[in-house]
Image 1 (cartoon, rainbow, N blue to C red):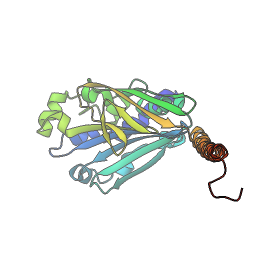
Image 2: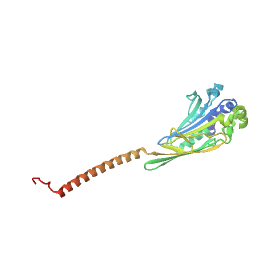
Image 3: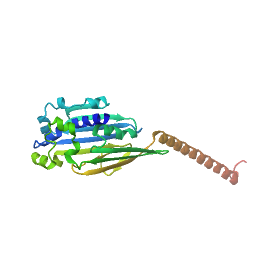
Length: 268
C-alpha cells in the first residue's frame, strides 16, 4: 500500500537514531520546514542532522539509507553531507502546488499518524489582502516508540528499539531530550506571528521528546495586483486633487480681481 511505502522511507531517514542514542556524546537533530509562497504553493523538507561524533560512528550511512520509495514519490533526497553548522545532514524535500496539498505531502514522509501530523495551511483572500493560517501537531509523548515500526525493528534485529526511553537515556549518559532534539520551521507570506519564536521572518518551534505541542502561525500579505491597482488609483486621485486645487485657486484670484475693479491710477 502507498501509505506503508510512504512511511518506510521516513523510518529509513531516522533508522540510525536508536543506535546512535546508545553512544554517549552523540546528538541527533530532526528538522521539519514548511515554506509557503505567495500563490499558495511551497515546499516541505524533513531533515535529520548528526553531530560530528554521531556521523563519525556511521561512516557508511549513505549505503544504509533506503530512499528509493521517497524518490519514486517525487521527493528530492540529498546527503548525508556535512554542512556549515558542523552537522551531517540527510534531507528530503518535496514541493506542493497548493495549500491543500501541504499536509498530504508531510504525511507522505512522516505518516498520517506519525509524530508530525495534522498540518493544515489555509488562505483567506480578500480584495487587497490574504490571511494565512498554519496549524499542526507534534506529538512526541510516545518517545522513541513514536518513530518505530515493525520494519525498523526487523532492520535492527529486534534490538535497541525495544529499549525504554529511560534505558536509552541511561546508556547515553544524559537526558533523552538532550540527545534527540527537534525543530519545526514555518514560513508564510507576509509578517508571521504565532505561538512559536520568530526568527528571520519565520515561526520556529522546538518540541521536546515526551511532550505534545500544538503549532499555530498566521500572517497577512498584500495581493500584488490589488496593491498595484490601489497605488495607481491613489496616485491618480492625488493628481486629480492637485488639479482641482489649482483650478480653485486660479478661479478665486480671478473673482477677486473682478470684484476689486481696475487698479487706481490705471488708464482704464
